Length: 41
Image 1 (cartoon, rainbow, N blue to C red):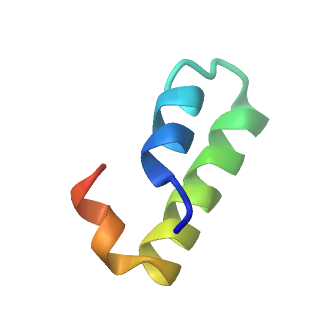
Image 2 (cartoon, rainbow, N blue to C red):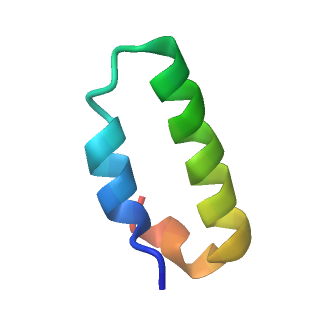
């Protein structure tokens, strides 16, 4: 299973607008593909 928590930690420090946009896209994909992982966030 994809480690959404690692993505969250890695991108939480992002200060670039594009990086933040990518981060939210990844989070949405995580929630869609792995609903159970939302508990990790």
